[in-house]
Length: 291
Image (cartoon, rainbow, N blue to C red; front, side, top):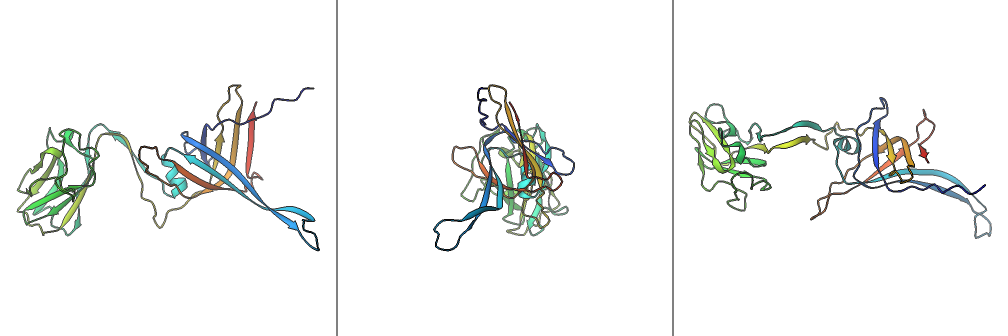
């Protein structure tokens, strides 16, 4: 009988985590650089006498880890690797402005004497909206300056720029009167109510989202955040012969999702997880190969 063809593994196709209790799939990760399972045993040697060499050796504890080089950031990764499930929102074909809130003091966003709301200029404002977090600052009892955190969409609609190094976007202070008070190039309208009585240096803030296909929001580092254990399938790339290779990791504990920003490169995260013994399945992981 001739020797069988050697079994080999080529490339990586995807990883798919699943809930340990319900077995429901969290989702999948396909844009991967690698995934490696490492079993590192401790070898305990019997030494003694005048021998320079071990008389015997036995395997002690085994450290079992899985490393993942990920080049995408699905929502479930924040839950499993950073301990917090994100909030997902449907996409929007138009820009959206959030409710404005006071940051320092209470004189700017004021339902009696101040700005009652921030929105878009009727009919013409939304096409000129620019993404970012905006800060309103009182510069006199009746006037404000406006600043924005990023110029990433300053070319949307009317092309604009910053006015100074503090990221101010209005050339002259904006006087707030009863009714509409536009910041035309940014599509914004500040609705005045009553007689403004701003306290100088008070601030308020709001956000503008430009049209998008969906939004994910998550706050990491909360005192009640938890890192759930999960199972995980790892799949090699299907070979030209049609053979496939799967590893099922029974219980996985992960923590940490590095998020890097590098000039002219896609972000890549190196993730390390522990593979734990599962008493109900009497093992750490299983291998299934279809030749």
